[in-house]
Image 1 (cartoon, rainbow, N blue to C red):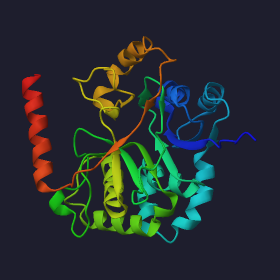
Image 2: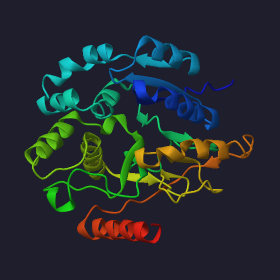
Image 3: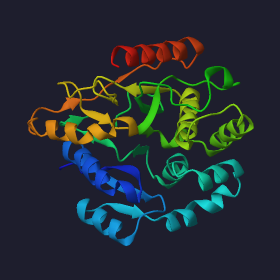
Image 4: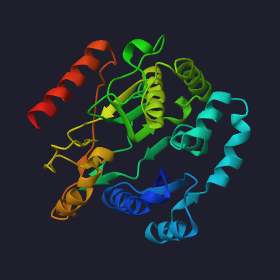
Amino acid sequence: MIETVIPQTVHSLVCHRDVEMALLCLNSLLKFSVEPLRITLHDDGSLNSSDIEKLREGLPGTTIISRKEADQAVLTTLSRYPYCANFRRRAPTALKLIDVPLLSNDDICCIDTDVLFFRPFSGLLRWPSSDISAIFMRDYQDAYSLKPWQLGSFKAPSQINVGLMFVRKKAYDLDFMEKVLKDIESRSKQSEGPHWFQEQTCWAIFAGHVGCRLWNPNQMRVLNEQDTLDQSLVAGHFVSPIRHKLGEFYEQAKLINPGSPPVTMNTIKVQDYNFRNWARIRLARRLNRIFHA
């Protein structure tokens, strides 16, 4: 008997501005994954009918959850979680923190629309051990809204990036997220950065609570200006400062044989988000800017 492999659902938050980029990047994920995947898109509230038609045509079989449908599905639950509800009202990326986990039936996988894959891969969504409940990408900085000494009783790993994340469904705890958001709100005068820093801080604190690892940064990471498409790089996260290089990497990736053996994805341990590591990363970034100025 042939065993039927059920595709893992990958969720992605998409906006009107990034529809074309979403089609490019999400199709690269589907193209190069050895394991079958299916996509569920979450409308941030800005998609129009033309956007939805493009997404349905460009990503056949994809499920699209409108903002109205999402509101109907989660707002009753959030009536018991005022800090989560408030964050969701004011921050589009809160849908990644709240809607995606609540609307996921299985383990939670979410990817941003600016993560591009370059070559075949396998084992991306595989748990390395039973004591790990979350896997994230590695950032080149600590893009958090709180400094290490502002975490209070919480702890967090360093350099968490949520451009791609894999979280055990049973580990996700809305009560815990409410507690974290309440604490961050109480420190509002100390916090800094855009709303996605706050979302990432919540995930980092969650990761420190449940145990996490990072995908091997040699294979996948947040890219910086000096990065090139080398033989080990499977995917890159093109955050805003490096977004202009996405097309260049895409063209280079066309030269890679799509039939080459898939790269087996693996993970590494995290470092603590403490003053020493925070200072080390800041110094390294400053020196890098000086030497590449």
